Image (cartoon, rainbow, N blue to C red; front, side):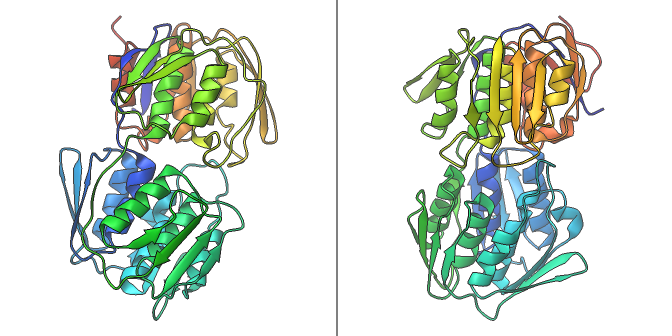
Amino acid sequence: MDEIHIVGGKKICGSIVVQGSKNTVLPLMAASLLHAGVSVLRGCPRITDVFCMEEILQRLGAVTWWKEHDLYLDCTRANGTEVPEQYAGKMRCSVILLGALLGRWQKGAIGYPGGCVIGKRPVDLHLYALRSLGAEITEQEGMLHASARKLKGGEIFFAKKSVGATEQAVLAAVLAEGKTVIRNCAEEPEILWLCRYLRSMGARICGEGGPCIEIEGVSALQGGEMKIPADRIVTGTYLCAAAATRGKVTIPNAPEGELDAFLEVYRKMGGQYEWKSGKLIANGMGIRFPVEYLETAVYPGFPTDLQSPLLAVLATVDGESCIKENIFENRFRICQELAEMGAEVQTDGRKVKIRGGRLAGCRVRAGELRGGAALVIAALAAEGYSVVEGNSFIRRGYENLCGDLRAAGGLITEDTGSIYI
Protein backbone atom coordinates (compact mmCIF):
# COMPACT_ATOMS: atom_id res chain seq x y z
CA MET A 1 0.00 0.00 0.00
CA ASP A 2 1.08 3.57 -0.62
CA GLU A 3 -1.14 5.39 1.86
CA ILE A 4 -1.09 7.47 5.02
CA HIS A 5 -4.02 7.21 7.42
CA ILE A 6 -4.90 10.13 9.66
CA VAL A 7 -7.53 10.99 12.26
CA GLY A 8 -7.64 14.75 12.46
CA GLY A 9 -8.38 17.13 15.28
CA LYS A 10 -5.31 16.62 17.46
CA LYS A 11 -2.89 19.49 18.04
CA ILE A 12 0.70 18.99 16.89
CA CYS A 13 2.73 19.84 19.99
CA GLY A 14 6.24 18.82 20.91
CA SER A 15 9.89 18.91 19.97
CA ILE A 16 10.95 17.68 16.52
CA VAL A 17 14.56 17.27 15.36
CA VAL A 18 14.65 18.01 11.64
CA GLN A 19 16.46 15.76 9.16
CA GLY A 20 19.38 16.85 6.99
CA SER A 21 18.62 18.98 3.97
CA LYS A 22 17.59 17.17 0.78
CA ASN A 23 18.41 20.11 -1.45
CA THR A 24 21.87 20.40 0.10
CA VAL A 25 22.98 16.77 0.15
CA LEU A 26 22.17 15.95 -3.49
CA PRO A 27 24.59 18.48 -5.09
CA LEU A 28 27.21 17.54 -2.48
CA MET A 29 26.92 13.92 -3.58
CA ALA A 30 27.48 15.06 -7.17
CA ALA A 31 30.46 17.15 -6.05
CA SER A 32 32.05 14.11 -4.39
CA LEU A 33 32.43 12.61 -7.87
CA LEU A 34 35.08 15.26 -8.63
CA HIS A 35 37.60 13.59 -6.29
CA ALA A 36 39.15 10.17 -6.94
CA GLY A 37 38.92 9.13 -3.30
CA VAL A 38 36.66 8.99 -0.26
CA SER A 39 34.33 11.77 0.91
CA VAL A 40 31.96 11.73 3.88
CA LEU A 41 28.58 13.41 4.23
CA ARG A 42 27.40 13.31 7.83
CA GLY A 43 23.79 13.52 8.93
CA CYS A 44 22.32 12.57 5.55
CA PRO A 45 18.56 12.13 5.30
CA ARG A 46 17.62 8.55 4.42
CA ILE A 47 15.09 9.49 1.75
CA THR A 48 14.24 8.17 -1.70
CA ASP A 49 15.99 10.96 -3.61
CA VAL A 50 19.26 10.36 -1.74
CA PHE A 51 19.02 6.62 -2.39
CA CYS A 52 18.38 7.34 -6.07
CA MET A 53 21.44 9.61 -6.35
CA GLU A 54 23.48 6.99 -4.48
CA GLU A 55 22.37 4.37 -7.00
CA ILE A 56 23.36 6.63 -9.89
CA LEU A 57 26.84 7.15 -8.39
CA GLN A 58 27.18 3.39 -7.92
CA ARG A 59 26.24 2.92 -11.57
CA LEU A 60 29.09 5.32 -12.42
CA GLY A 61 31.51 3.14 -10.44
CA ALA A 62 31.47 4.70 -6.97
CA VAL A 63 31.47 2.51 -3.88
CA THR A 64 29.14 3.76 -1.14
CA TRP A 65 28.26 2.69 2.36
CA TRP A 66 26.32 4.01 5.36
CA LYS A 67 27.13 4.25 9.04
CA GLU A 68 23.79 5.23 10.54
CA HIS A 69 23.17 8.64 8.91
CA ASP A 70 26.71 9.16 7.62
CA LEU A 71 27.19 8.42 3.93
CA TYR A 72 30.64 7.43 2.64
CA LEU A 73 31.40 7.87 -1.06
CA ASP A 74 34.50 6.26 -2.54
CA CYS A 75 34.84 7.58 -6.09
CA THR A 76 38.36 6.20 -6.67
CA ARG A 77 37.23 3.85 -9.43
CA ALA A 78 34.26 5.86 -10.64
CA ASN A 79 34.93 5.89 -14.36
CA GLY A 80 31.42 5.77 -15.81
CA THR A 81 30.32 8.77 -17.83
CA GLU A 82 26.72 7.95 -18.72
CA VAL A 83 23.64 8.30 -16.48
CA PRO A 84 20.94 6.08 -18.00
CA GLU A 85 17.50 7.51 -18.61
CA GLN A 86 15.82 5.16 -16.13
CA TYR A 87 17.79 6.85 -13.33
CA ALA A 88 17.74 10.41 -14.58
CA GLY A 89 14.01 10.17 -15.17
CA LYS A 90 13.40 9.59 -11.47
CA MET A 91 14.99 12.77 -10.20
CA ARG A 92 15.25 16.23 -11.69
CA CYS A 93 18.48 17.35 -10.05
CA SER A 94 20.44 14.47 -11.59
CA VAL A 95 21.19 16.82 -14.51
CA ILE A 96 23.86 18.56 -12.39
CA LEU A 97 25.97 15.41 -12.73
CA LEU A 98 26.88 16.62 -16.22
CA GLY A 99 29.08 19.36 -14.75
CA ALA A 100 30.79 16.90 -12.41
CA LEU A 101 31.35 14.35 -15.19
CA LEU A 102 32.83 17.03 -17.45
CA GLY A 103 35.11 18.19 -14.65
CA ARG A 104 36.31 14.65 -13.89
CA TRP A 105 36.35 13.02 -17.33
CA GLN A 106 35.79 15.83 -19.87
CA LYS A 107 32.68 14.05 -21.08
CA GLY A 108 29.29 12.93 -19.84
CA ALA A 109 25.84 11.86 -20.98
CA ILE A 110 22.49 11.84 -19.23
CA GLY A 111 18.89 11.08 -20.05
CA TYR A 112 16.37 13.85 -19.74
CA PRO A 113 15.90 14.48 -16.01
CA GLY A 114 12.56 13.89 -14.30
CA GLY A 115 11.07 14.21 -10.81
CA CYS A 116 7.89 15.82 -9.54
CA VAL A 117 5.44 17.11 -12.14
CA ILE A 118 5.22 20.70 -10.89
CA GLY A 119 6.31 22.58 -13.99
CA LYS A 120 8.40 22.54 -17.15
CA ARG A 121 11.77 23.35 -15.54
CA PRO A 122 13.77 23.42 -18.82
CA VAL A 123 17.49 22.69 -18.83
CA ASP A 124 18.46 25.50 -21.19
CA LEU A 125 20.30 27.45 -18.47
CA HIS A 126 22.27 24.34 -17.52
CA LEU A 127 23.39 23.83 -21.10
CA TYR A 128 24.20 27.52 -21.52
CA ALA A 129 26.47 27.41 -18.45
CA LEU A 130 28.36 24.34 -19.70
CA ARG A 131 28.74 25.77 -23.19
CA SER A 132 30.11 28.98 -21.67
CA LEU A 133 32.95 26.89 -20.24
CA GLY A 134 33.74 25.26 -23.57
CA ALA A 135 31.55 22.16 -23.58
CA GLU A 136 30.01 20.85 -26.78
CA ILE A 137 26.52 19.45 -26.24
CA THR A 138 24.44 17.34 -28.58
CA GLU A 139 21.22 15.36 -28.32
CA GLN A 140 21.25 11.73 -29.44
CA GLU A 141 18.38 9.30 -29.00
CA GLY A 142 16.91 11.06 -26.00
CA MET A 143 20.27 11.55 -24.29
CA LEU A 144 22.23 14.76 -23.70
CA HIS A 145 25.92 14.27 -24.56
CA ALA A 146 28.52 16.78 -23.39
CA SER A 147 32.25 16.81 -24.06
CA ALA A 148 35.24 19.15 -23.90
CA ARG A 149 38.96 18.81 -24.53
CA LYS A 150 39.38 20.87 -21.38
CA LEU A 151 36.85 23.11 -19.69
CA LYS A 152 38.05 26.69 -19.57
CA GLY A 153 36.89 29.45 -17.23
CA GLY A 154 34.58 32.07 -18.61
CA GLU A 155 31.81 34.59 -17.96
CA ILE A 156 28.35 33.21 -17.21
CA PHE A 157 25.37 35.54 -16.87
CA PHE A 158 22.06 33.86 -16.13
CA ALA A 159 19.00 35.55 -17.65
CA LYS A 160 17.10 34.43 -14.55
CA LYS A 161 18.13 32.94 -11.25
CA SER A 162 18.22 29.16 -11.15
CA VAL A 163 19.43 27.00 -8.28
CA GLY A 164 20.16 23.96 -10.43
CA ALA A 165 21.92 25.91 -13.18
CA THR A 166 24.06 27.73 -10.61
CA GLU A 167 25.05 24.39 -9.07
CA GLN A 168 25.83 23.08 -12.55
CA ALA A 169 28.08 26.03 -13.29
CA VAL A 170 29.93 25.75 -9.96
CA LEU A 171 30.53 22.01 -10.35
CA ALA A 172 31.89 22.45 -13.86
CA ALA A 173 34.06 25.48 -13.03
CA VAL A 174 36.05 24.23 -10.03
CA LEU A 175 38.34 22.05 -12.19
CA ALA A 176 38.20 24.27 -15.28
CA GLU A 177 41.31 26.05 -16.47
CA GLY A 178 41.35 29.70 -15.42
CA LYS A 179 38.81 31.98 -13.80
CA THR A 180 35.02 31.71 -13.99
CA VAL A 181 32.63 34.49 -13.01
CA ILE A 182 28.96 33.53 -12.51
CA ARG A 183 26.59 36.49 -12.44
CA ASN A 184 22.92 36.67 -11.40
CA CYS A 185 23.36 33.32 -9.71
CA ALA A 186 20.94 31.82 -7.21
CA GLU A 187 21.48 32.78 -3.57
CA GLU A 188 19.74 29.87 -1.84
CA PRO A 189 21.47 28.35 1.20
CA GLU A 190 22.06 25.18 -0.82
CA ILE A 191 24.47 27.13 -3.07
CA LEU A 192 26.31 28.40 0.00
CA TRP A 193 26.76 24.87 1.39
CA LEU A 194 27.88 23.48 -1.97
CA CYS A 195 30.57 26.14 -2.26
CA ARG A 196 31.72 25.57 1.31
CA TYR A 197 31.95 21.84 0.70
CA LEU A 198 33.94 22.32 -2.48
CA ARG A 199 36.24 24.77 -0.70
CA SER A 200 36.89 22.08 1.95
CA MET A 201 37.96 19.88 -0.98
CA GLY A 202 40.45 22.50 -2.14
CA ALA A 203 38.38 24.54 -4.59
CA ARG A 204 39.03 28.29 -4.83
CA ILE A 205 35.65 29.98 -4.59
CA CYS A 206 34.46 33.35 -3.31
CA GLY A 207 31.21 35.32 -3.35
CA GLU A 208 28.79 32.52 -2.56
CA GLY A 209 25.62 33.73 -0.90
CA GLY A 210 25.54 36.77 -3.19
CA PRO A 211 24.61 37.39 -6.83
CA CYS A 212 28.16 36.87 -8.16
CA ILE A 213 30.39 33.86 -7.58
CA GLU A 214 34.03 33.80 -8.68
CA ILE A 215 35.95 30.56 -9.11
CA GLU A 216 39.62 30.04 -9.89
CA GLY A 217 40.04 26.56 -11.30
CA VAL A 218 42.40 24.08 -9.65
CA SER A 219 44.02 20.95 -11.08
CA ALA A 220 42.65 18.50 -8.51
CA LEU A 221 40.45 18.24 -5.41
CA GLN A 222 40.84 16.26 -2.21
CA GLY A 223 38.24 14.32 -0.25
CA GLY A 224 35.44 16.30 1.35
CA GLU A 225 33.62 16.03 4.66
CA MET A 226 30.60 17.99 5.83
CA LYS A 227 27.73 17.82 8.27
CA ILE A 228 24.50 18.28 6.34
CA PRO A 229 22.49 21.22 7.73
CA ALA A 230 18.88 20.90 8.82
CA ASP A 231 16.30 21.00 6.04
CA ARG A 232 14.60 24.41 5.94
CA ILE A 233 11.61 23.12 3.94
CA VAL A 234 10.98 20.24 6.37
CA THR A 235 11.25 22.76 9.21
CA GLY A 236 8.62 24.93 7.55
CA THR A 237 6.42 21.88 6.95
CA TYR A 238 6.38 21.02 10.65
CA LEU A 239 5.62 24.63 11.55
CA CYS A 240 2.70 24.50 9.11
CA ALA A 241 1.44 21.28 10.73
CA ALA A 242 1.43 22.97 14.13
CA ALA A 243 -0.19 26.10 12.67
CA ALA A 244 -2.99 24.18 10.94
CA THR A 245 -3.81 22.29 14.14
CA ARG A 246 -3.22 25.36 16.36
CA GLY A 247 -0.40 23.61 18.14
CA LYS A 248 3.13 24.48 19.23
CA VAL A 249 6.46 22.98 18.17
CA THR A 250 10.09 23.38 19.10
CA ILE A 251 12.76 22.70 16.48
CA PRO A 252 16.08 22.28 18.35
CA ASN A 253 18.20 22.35 15.17
CA ALA A 254 16.24 24.81 13.00
CA PRO A 255 18.33 26.55 10.30
CA GLU A 256 18.38 30.10 11.66
CA GLY A 257 18.32 32.82 9.04
CA GLU A 258 17.02 30.58 6.25
CA LEU A 259 13.27 30.91 6.92
CA ASP A 260 12.82 34.63 7.45
CA ALA A 261 10.29 35.11 4.62
CA PHE A 262 8.18 32.19 5.83
CA LEU A 263 8.31 33.27 9.48
CA GLU A 264 7.17 36.77 8.54
CA VAL A 265 4.05 35.31 6.92
CA TYR A 266 3.58 33.00 9.91
CA ARG A 267 3.66 36.03 12.21
CA LYS A 268 1.13 37.95 10.09
CA MET A 269 -1.28 35.01 10.33
CA GLY A 270 -1.19 35.32 14.11
CA GLY A 271 1.56 32.87 14.91
CA GLN A 272 4.29 33.63 17.42
CA TYR A 273 7.87 32.45 17.41
CA GLU A 274 11.18 33.02 19.17
CA TRP A 275 14.75 31.85 18.88
CA LYS A 276 16.11 30.64 22.21
CA SER A 277 19.56 29.11 22.64
CA GLY A 278 19.59 28.04 18.99
CA LYS A 279 16.10 26.54 19.16
CA LEU A 280 13.08 27.76 17.21
CA ILE A 281 9.92 27.79 19.31
CA ALA A 282 6.79 28.35 17.21
CA ASN A 283 3.32 28.81 18.70
CA GLY A 284 0.48 28.43 16.19
CA MET A 285 -2.39 28.66 18.66
CA GLY A 286 -3.17 32.23 17.59
CA ILE A 287 -3.29 31.54 13.84
CA ARG A 288 -6.50 33.19 12.60
CA PHE A 289 -5.71 35.81 9.94
CA PRO A 290 -5.84 35.14 6.19
CA VAL A 291 -3.01 36.18 3.88
CA GLU A 292 -4.40 38.93 1.70
CA TYR A 293 -1.75 38.52 -1.01
CA LEU A 294 1.53 36.61 -1.26
CA GLU A 295 3.92 35.83 -4.09
CA THR A 296 6.50 33.07 -4.15
CA ALA A 297 9.97 34.20 -5.16
CA VAL A 298 13.57 33.08 -5.39
CA TYR A 299 15.53 33.20 -2.15
CA PRO A 300 15.34 35.17 0.09
CA GLY A 301 11.67 35.49 -0.95
CA PHE A 302 8.88 33.14 0.09
CA PRO A 303 9.91 29.62 -1.01
CA THR A 304 7.81 27.85 -3.61
CA ASP A 305 8.37 24.56 -1.74
CA LEU A 306 6.35 25.92 1.21
CA GLN A 307 3.52 27.33 -0.89
CA SER A 308 1.47 24.11 -0.76
CA PRO A 309 1.95 23.55 3.00
CA LEU A 310 0.94 27.18 3.58
CA LEU A 311 -2.14 26.67 1.41
CA ALA A 312 -3.14 23.80 3.70
CA VAL A 313 -2.88 26.11 6.71
CA LEU A 314 -4.94 28.80 4.97
CA ALA A 315 -7.62 26.18 4.29
CA THR A 316 -8.25 26.25 8.07
CA VAL A 317 -8.40 30.06 8.37
CA ASP A 318 -11.63 32.05 7.99
CA GLY A 319 -11.50 34.69 5.28
CA GLU A 320 -10.02 34.85 1.81
CA SER A 321 -6.31 34.44 1.04
CA CYS A 322 -4.54 34.83 -2.29
CA ILE A 323 -1.21 33.37 -3.45
CA LYS A 324 0.58 33.93 -6.74
CA GLU A 325 3.04 31.23 -7.80
CA ASN A 326 5.99 32.71 -9.69
CA ILE A 327 8.38 29.75 -9.83
CA PHE A 328 6.48 26.69 -11.10
CA GLU A 329 3.29 26.90 -13.12
CA ASN A 330 1.80 23.63 -11.85
CA ARG A 331 2.04 24.07 -8.09
CA PHE A 332 -1.73 24.12 -7.51
CA ARG A 333 -2.29 20.40 -7.98
CA ILE A 334 -3.63 20.03 -4.44
CA CYS A 335 -6.41 22.60 -4.85
CA GLN A 336 -8.99 20.05 -5.99
CA GLU A 337 -8.07 17.83 -3.05
CA LEU A 338 -8.47 20.71 -0.58
CA ALA A 339 -11.84 21.48 -2.15
CA GLU A 340 -12.87 17.86 -1.53
CA MET A 341 -12.07 18.46 2.14
CA GLY A 342 -14.30 21.54 2.29
CA ALA A 343 -12.13 24.53 1.39
CA GLU A 344 -13.38 27.05 -1.17
CA VAL A 345 -10.62 27.20 -3.77
CA GLN A 346 -10.46 29.11 -7.03
CA THR A 347 -7.47 29.03 -9.39
CA ASP A 348 -6.78 31.54 -12.13
CA GLY A 349 -3.54 30.90 -14.00
CA ARG A 350 -0.72 31.36 -11.51
CA LYS A 351 -3.02 32.70 -8.79
CA VAL A 352 -5.11 30.83 -6.27
CA LYS A 353 -7.74 32.21 -3.92
CA ILE A 354 -8.77 30.15 -0.94
CA ARG A 355 -11.44 30.72 1.67
CA GLY A 356 -10.83 28.48 4.63
CA GLY A 357 -12.85 27.18 7.52
CA ARG A 358 -13.68 23.70 8.74
CA LEU A 359 -12.20 20.78 6.85
CA ALA A 360 -13.67 17.29 6.74
CA GLY A 361 -11.62 14.13 6.44
CA CYS A 362 -11.79 12.15 3.19
CA ARG A 363 -9.63 10.23 0.72
CA VAL A 364 -7.21 12.43 -1.23
CA ARG A 365 -4.25 11.75 -3.50
CA ALA A 366 -0.82 13.36 -3.61
CA GLY A 367 0.64 14.08 -7.04
CA GLU A 368 4.02 15.45 -5.97
CA LEU A 369 6.31 15.82 -2.96
CA ARG A 370 5.34 19.11 -1.26
CA GLY A 371 1.70 18.80 -2.22
CA GLY A 372 1.65 15.41 -0.52
CA ALA A 373 3.02 16.88 2.70
CA ALA A 374 0.42 19.65 2.45
CA LEU A 375 -2.42 17.12 2.22
CA VAL A 376 -1.10 15.44 5.36
CA ILE A 377 -1.21 18.84 7.10
CA ALA A 378 -4.79 19.44 5.96
CA ALA A 379 -5.82 15.97 7.13
CA LEU A 380 -4.30 16.57 10.57
CA ALA A 381 -6.50 19.66 10.89
CA ALA A 382 -9.65 18.11 9.44
CA GLU A 383 -12.50 16.58 11.38
CA GLY A 384 -12.62 12.81 11.09
CA TYR A 385 -10.67 10.24 9.14
CA SER A 386 -8.54 10.85 6.05
CA VAL A 387 -6.46 8.73 3.71
CA VAL A 388 -3.64 10.35 1.75
CA GLU A 389 -2.62 8.26 -1.23
CA GLY A 390 0.76 8.68 -2.92
CA ASN A 391 3.07 8.33 0.07
CA SER A 392 5.89 7.43 -2.32
CA PHE A 393 6.02 11.08 -3.39
CA ILE A 394 6.37 12.21 0.22
CA ARG A 395 9.18 9.75 0.92
CA ARG A 396 11.26 11.48 -1.75
CA GLY A 397 11.91 14.35 0.65
CA TYR A 398 10.73 13.38 4.15
CA GLU A 399 12.56 10.68 6.05
CA ASN A 400 9.96 10.13 8.76
CA LEU A 401 7.06 12.54 8.31
CA CYS A 402 4.53 10.24 9.94
CA GLY A 403 6.78 9.23 12.82
CA ASP A 404 7.76 12.81 13.62
CA LEU A 405 4.16 14.02 13.55
CA ARG A 406 2.94 11.02 15.55
CA ALA A 407 5.55 11.72 18.24
CA ALA A 408 4.18 15.28 18.40
CA GLY A 409 0.62 14.11 19.00
CA GLY A 410 -0.76 13.39 15.55
CA LEU A 411 -2.95 10.33 14.99
CA ILE A 412 -1.15 9.21 11.85
CA THR A 413 0.24 5.98 10.48
CA GLU A 414 1.46 4.53 7.19
CA ASP A 415 0.06 1.68 5.09
CA THR A 416 -2.62 0.41 7.42
CA GLY A 417 -6.37 0.74 7.39
CA SER A 418 -6.95 1.56 11.02
CA ILE A 419 -5.65 3.68 13.87
CA TYR A 420 -5.95 2.80 17.52
CA ILE A 421 -7.22 5.87 19.38
